[in-house]
Amino acid sequence: MKIRIALFSLLISLAACNSTSKRSSAVASSKETKTENFKYWNWITVGNKKTDAEFEAHFKKLKKYGIDAVLVNTGADPKLLKRVAPIAKKAGLEVHAWMFTTNRPGDSVAMQHPDWYMVSRSGKSCFKKEERPYVGYYQWLSPSHPEARKHILSLVEGLAKVDGVTSVHLDYIRYPDVYLPIGLLPKYNLKQEEELPDYDFDYSDASVNKFIKLHHKDPRKMTNPAIDIEWKNFRLNEIKSLVDEAYTIVHKHNKKLSAAVFPYPEMADHMVRQRWDKWNIDMVLPMIYYNFYNEELDWIGYATKQGISDLEGKKTELHTGLFTPKLSNADLKQAIQLAKDNGAKGVAFFDDYGMTEEQFEIIKASKK
Image (cartoon, rainbow, N blue to C red; front, side, top):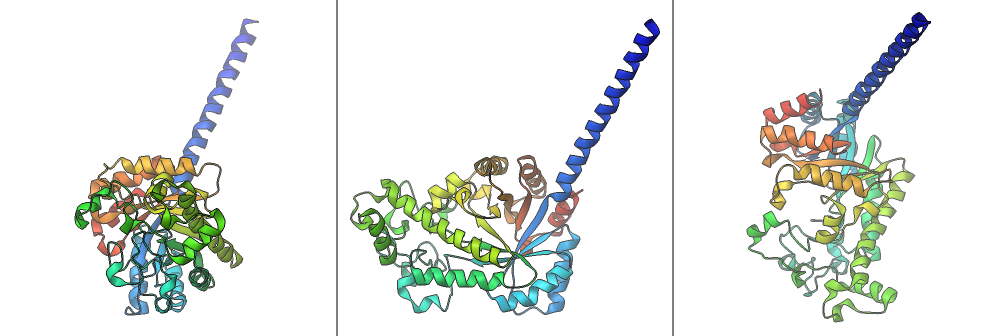
């Protein structure tokens, strides 16, 4: 009897060890899969000056150093994208068509229509160079103007039609900065402790008239429009509906929709009228440029985790955007790890033209 009990105990012990071993293997396999599926992106602007051979060499370099996907800015030119995309794909890179969306600097079609542009509460139009907020390239189109919206969506569709593209990538899909990142305020000699009239948009006729039709009140006549929730929510929904229309268009062409966004939804809402956790979108790349906000490195982990939490229950992937010019080698390594540890599906680097060989080596080593 004692022998049977001892034998039974030994069998249970062996079974437990085997089960533990399987669990350990499963955990190890899960970690390996997580590392293998962690995507490395790179934002890159291209033009017509480089030869195909130069593009090929550059894309091969990116692949060599561990980059999986390139976000290619062609100025929303599908012809240039058709030329570049096959070269990038041949090098083993996934291609995403990066475009400026509501901010359309140098758009020759839009510039023929002054009424397409956003207007500030102080009455300044983004059409006029001398009246644009912050910088000359802030040429913001109103998502409330039917023809401006139609134009933006036609550009989206033009890029979505290009073979070999995985997603159309929306940048500047928002309103102008109501509040600049705190680290940038000294550059413009500004103090923004409330919503200032020069930086509060869109008081264009198209936007105001559409709002009045919905809510029967005029934001131009409000004593303090910043506290009117319908007015704020109207603008959030104008961006959301534009994104949702773009989503429908790109999916019609069997492509995905991605976007560069502000660090996490609550901050994006506050700063630029952008509530991206409510959008129909496949992937978001929040630009978690911690130094712009006078934050410390670990804020990358905080903002990543907050975004992941806000997307809970949605299929949208989050990939953390990193600003490499301000990252030391040690900080770059830690930044990638912070994104991984806090649930990101990948990291995107801005941008490779200013990156050093040492940074590329760190990126490559972090994939192991």
